[in-house]
Length: 331
Image: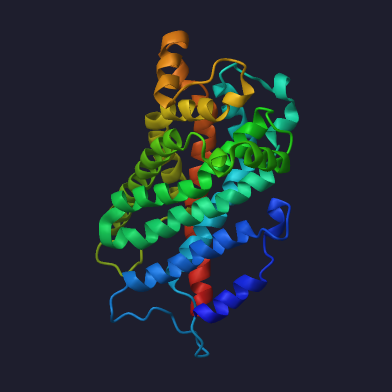
């Protein structure tokens, strides 16, 4: 499997233009890396008696089922984030230190960098769903969701840094943002405020995925009781999956909102003329001391709309896409 796959990697031009240079196919490499990891991980996670690859009708081997989770999770996350990008932009503005509004940055900020930064969500979702799918059968949803959240930060932190600086008007374009961050701060510049970001992402994703698993199991158990004695295969409807996503995101959002505000303040310091925060702890204490504790929940309304919509759509689309890809594999 590896030899033809590596040959494909060398020749694939899939998303090389995203970063403005055909010599830097980083987006393509990241997606293929996650894809390859899911293939290897799925082989080790299966019992010895189970074949790693599902044979096609014609005798050729198809890809393992977990690769479908990677593709479905990444694609659904990217679509959802692109559609809800303006709402997230409003959330970012509401959390800035100087209270910026659309009047300050212009209405174009609602879509500035939308296509490029939303492409990062493809890999964020791929990491989250791929790692969750590989780890969950052995270690359970709690450990699996924590690993997925931590792994996805490799992609989600640079995405947040670039996106929030574009929205707040620090840079006027994606290319300018990447070039100037690289020149002024190097690689570490793309990971500024990574500590508060991980402190937000890990509990958020853990809460979201474990809540989803709990609610799904309860609903399916109830449906099985309703069909007691029959051979009907019970499954969740798309609307039920959307409702589970919305509920899970709302619970996680309430828990992590203060951390989200600190993360946004740290990432957008360049947009403010005030004295920079020394650390995430300094940021949080300064907000409480000078602006009041309620400021830690600024932008909660906008973030709730964004996160509930994002995870509702993601959890609604991912099972549909996974089922479609699984059926294609069996054909």
